[in-house]
Image 1: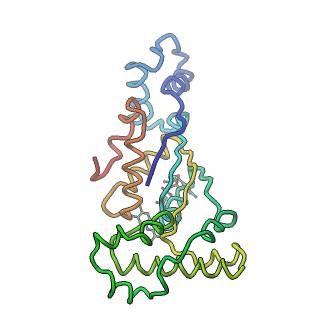
Image 2 (image 1 turned 90 degrees about the horizontal axis):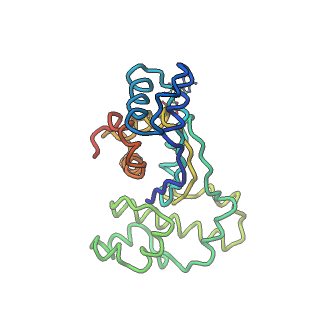
Image 3 (image 1 turned 90 degrees about the vertical axis):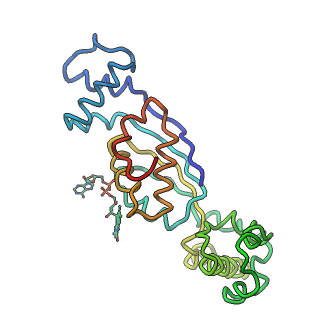
Length: 226
Ligand SMILES: Cc1cc2nc3c(=O)[nH]c(=O)nc-3n(C[C@H](O)[C@H](O)[C@H](O)COP(=O)(O)OP(=O)(O)OC[C@H]3O[C@@H](n4cnc5c(N)ncnc54)[C@H](O)[C@@H]3O)c2cc1C
């Protein structure tokens, strides 16, 4: 998984929005410690949380599964623009076989040394398309599903129908824009042990990719991760 912060608004803008309420613009220190303290006091402690909506972040998130995408999409207070399988599935047509015709069980019987398995040429190429769980029987089942999909595409079946047999592990990417209020909610819900491991990793990576001077707004939302 890769998370890249493409753009973010400045703390100064958020402080300006807060100062609008009191017309206290003269107290601004241009996004410095006074403004940071003001944002935390008003946005977090006084629960005037809508002021945090003036802070927005846009991330480019890649190498995550469609299983994760499904969970991410439940966060309504964010805007995702997602790689379309409809337009991009043809990427599989140029690949050679992922399984040499073996079933998941046959693969398990033939190759069961995890270190060798994930270094294998087929697995290396498949890892461009699939997120591994490191549970071999699960990953082999994904591999077979990927091979089935490739064969279906080679038969000339259109993407709009072929996509219905995509494994949930199929990798996707998206541009995701979210404001600070909603991001606090996301990190709070998704960084805990009860969240799916992959979205927990994402919450961690998103936190790490934030500008250093913005992290203080999200530290208390973190659960179990550092
Ligand atoms: C551990 C875990 C397990 C989960 N398991 C399941 C599951 O089994 N099945 C399932 O369907 N989902 C599941 N979810 C998803 C969960 O129900 C939420 O849809 C998801 O976490 C998004 O949270 P949210 O609504 O707070 O976020 P957002 O949609 O971003 O909303 C942000 C906030 O806006 C407010 N808001 C948004 N929409 C409304 C509204 N219509 N009315 C009132 N207030 C609103 C709420 O305060 C909300 O917290 C799970 C989530 C977690 C963290």
